[in-house]
Image (cartoon, helix red, strand yellow):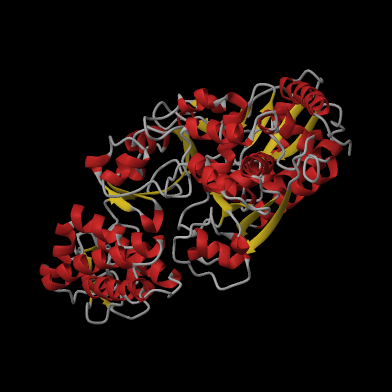
Length: 624
């Protein structure tokens, strides 16, 4: 592979690669280009098999001179994957199966005809939409900063990354002083995307001010929030962009080594990152005297074992050092005394993915996006009870209503929106009254939640908010490192109270105890895990207290979720006397005479498994 050891060589390579990629996607080379989503979601639905099928068919039909096929990163619209896009024209095919490849080859590639049945159908107009940019899911997004190139480039191709101006920001940084780079990031208003929202430039400044021969940059890819997949997808889609961000940070603070700390459960991200690092070492963009300057930098990978607490930066440091992943008291902060007691800057994946844009375009352009105290864009993993599940990148200031309804497509099956949980286990549940809240650091905190790393779980009328709080507390109890007693013992007691309430044994005193203990845990825990653990409880108590009281006073779960507080009932008017429910029941709790009498459920025997409800084809069974 040809070396890139000077600015002139970099610029020449970028110019060449840009022309090649443009020719590829505009059909100037006389070929059609087939790109297939290679994100984990689509890979799990056999997009790899789709690629293999395309490659086989291209050989069978002797189309080597007519088209190409390759993998790209995540398209984001996960509920409609696997995706196949055909250039020129950018025709986007959704929910593609291996068996569909032949029709795409015969109709589109050979016949020049769009395969209508595989296009996205607009749920409102019922019209077919051929172009990605015309789908509502994408219209409000700005997918060119953290998700730059994700659905256009081969994540294992340096040439395609260079075609998207990767390393232009680094090249500019190397012509600036370290302080000028830090000032550029500070003026951009970039804040940490891992959850706390600390100003990135200020963190870099602290480390730069420390006088030490050895300093480190760490990229925190230990993404463990339930339902979160932002960092994983960013690394999978364009690892070169994240590496560039790390290198710029390394140059700014005077570090020669960077560590990627990524979960071992992310094998695709790890593999692509390893390949990207090897490629950059081979061409000379990682190593000594990068681009002919005095700057030398190397990247290393450390795999996390899946402990949620290792997302906390000091626990992460212990893990890299081979110690048990437990947080350290602060101060000293990592920027002063971090990895192996050396000054260390820890930024998460998305934060570093923003940095190249700032250095390439200038701080003014970046700062023009977003709100007064929250600049740029934010990547969210939108999931739960929403039609359009997926990965979105939106400008700061986008409202929750726009996220859920305009991008997310609203709630499935005409159900009523109930709450959205932002910030994962550390966040709170926001209600319909909060839907016009702009997404930024201050506004979400003021409403009792937080942005966190970017998880956004939507809930509808069928969700029990007491059960939701219990779910997150169960997760926290499992993931607490146990170092401090407020978190180790306090979260366990909180879970016990929530379990008591959902089992129908709660009292009004329990509600007071739950709130008081939640505040004590938040105030006295050592690290962010324990300090924010009670947020789901406090936010649901505040917004859904009547639901808690229904569990305690009326011994009912209004959403019919908590098993000990619900009953299954057969409507005799709707019962067809077919006996299907009795045959489905594993506890023999349903009796009746087939064809003669309506069936009934013996509540004392019913184990509330729901088999009868799902098995009845006539809607005769309901939860009460």
